Image (cartoon, rainbow, N blue to C red; front, side, top):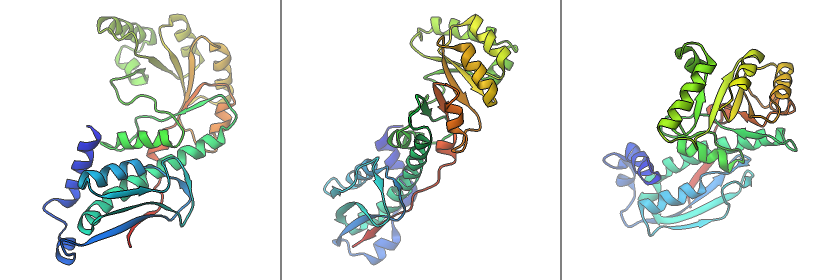
Length: 279
């Protein structure tokens, strides 16, 4: 779904046949200025989306940005102001706030994870653990917060996980060979391949077979993770996954893995407190 359509459907969900409160109380020709007030410290995200939304409702709206996406903001700051039809401002307010609060919460959590691994050569990745139909916004917020996106969905990266291996007969080798065959048949040689492993025996099995880009160490204890990193060396990219938190992420990074995938970036992020007020 493209962003313009997403905005249109989100507004339709809320407005339906009309914002009856505003239609009842606000004169049709009324114009106002509204300001986005920051009510909590964090990383701001969604300003660009807000401008797109207001301009989609009325291209003539005047939008003045004071703070850009990705900026650290403090309580009391004003992120932007927008001027236009009072009715239009009020019917757009809730979607803009919902989106920005969620996106800013994700970006703020991403920034905290990055602080924990500061100085270490590791990349923090998101996962597919996103809110249905909001993945685009949440992954956008991940990038604004300084972390990186893994795959967008099931279609743009091969990830051989335990369920694939079991459903393929229980053999990692068979699963990898099936992916290699599929890639060749469908001309997908450029698409990356990750294989999930549960122990050192499976690591050694993957090393013998090859034909992958990345080995994912799933829920490894730190001592075993260090052994796996030493065993794999530079032959393949190494990813750590499973139960990663702000308290554990640096310890995991210190084992020498190249990537750490963190579902919490999206599924456990809260919302940053923001408010849009008519002046």
